[in-house]
Image 1 (cartoon, rainbow, N blue to C red):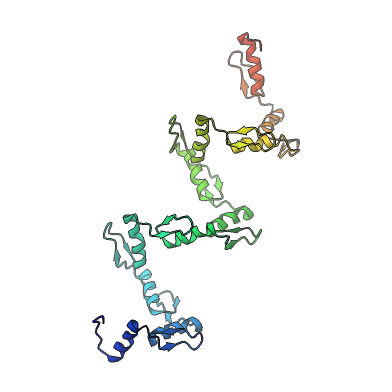
Image 2: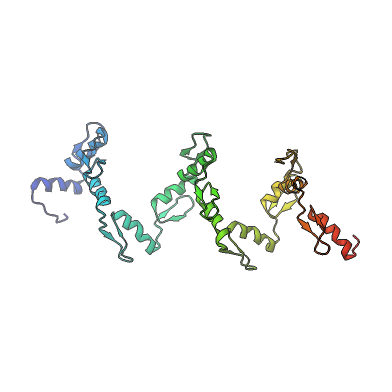
Length: 304
């Protein structure tokens, strides 16, 4: 049938079950059947919970001998599987197979909902959670649930107040690594994100998007009360306080509450005595930019 040869007749008979589909060895606990006695023996460990194979270096236990052998490569440092393209070597064949997709550009795993392609099966599985209502990772504090473990981990920092990512220049701390990386561009002076209209550069991709609205004239954020539209979401949020009684920004000196951050900054100048807006003609200084602009008409002779 397949010309495979064996030294013992019983091994030949067992092998022939592969071709016949016969599974004469059955599990007493779950009735699952197998083509060979060895496969049945291996299966019974699922029910017994037994881990008979032990690593002689770290004492980790395994159900199956081949899993122990794979594990021992960690301690030996042996990497028997080598990439034909870049010669990078791996301990396990599956890791080499996964790596080879980098060179081939192949995306063999396809989402059956949106047809998005993925290099790796585990990435496809993660992606499919977007389409399902399943959010398997839940916060112990507030019960909010997430599709991905990394999102839950990131969320828990809100409750702990922990900021584990520290800038090595100014010691400012951040809740997540992405925010630290963005911040570090402030110190490096690097501005990798470029506007394709005017070539102005930014250190944050989000700022490029906000900036490009200047060129398009688009105002995508609209107030649902008065229909006034804005270029960015922050300005819309500030504007919406006009329609509500909410005054979320409070002065830490006198507790006066105001509707937006800009007004709070202006108010705080009363306490500081600071006059940051200075006339370049007579050096008179003002607390507000609008007051400086009004004053400048004295020098220009303009009459509004």
